Length: 215
Image 1 (cartoon, rainbow, N blue to C red):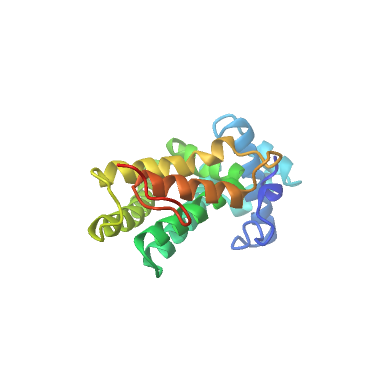
Image 2: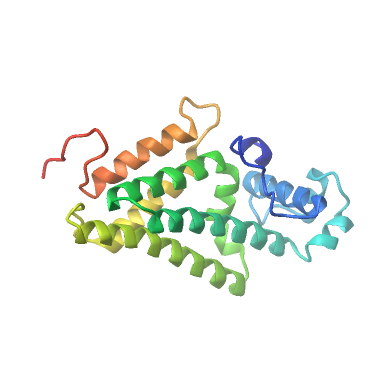
């Protein structure tokens, strides 16, 4: 499944990457890493998918690891933006948590190929780059934990273990990238809505239109 084909219709894939040749190489790298894995992919594989020579790749990226870092950084920045926007948004904790999960799952489904590379190739990064990405992950964790803590303080959520529940919520959302199929019955929006409902029930909140959970 090509990275361009997976992208949600209203978004231009990797629009923030320029020039065009660098963007084509990045898209090709996403496809190759997702299909073969980082370590089994060569720079020749990436350049060939982009319709370029291996020498042309080094004009824009010094190493294969630099390409992976660029993909990972952009993906984690997007994830953090989604979660931070929900955490800082208006509404009750339940509304903010629902918005966070809907958007986060929708991105992981709509960009499932990219998300698999972003989320599951962390160990292939250099120590310096891995430290940078782990820091972004911690910020994403903090955004979700903040919403859950707000819900507990407001009496909306029944969560004895906030850190553990935060980890469970993020893991649930991220795993969508592993199994989502664009030819399946559910759209990214539908999966996002389902997961938002599940997470609200997980924290003991009442989903919109639902009945209070039994405790």
